[in-house]
View (cartoon, rainbow, N blue to C red):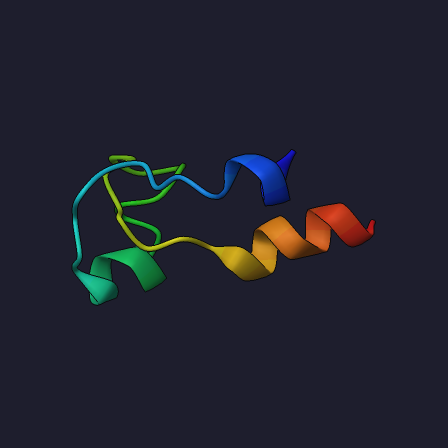
Length: 46
């Protein structure tokens, strides 16, 4: 459960530009330390 276990990031890359371009997220290098809460929350609603 998310609320019991919390959220975990893919890595320790704090570059926001790479994150918003999706270079460091799931489709890229997967080393972003920034969480995509909007995508996580939308998957809970749908």
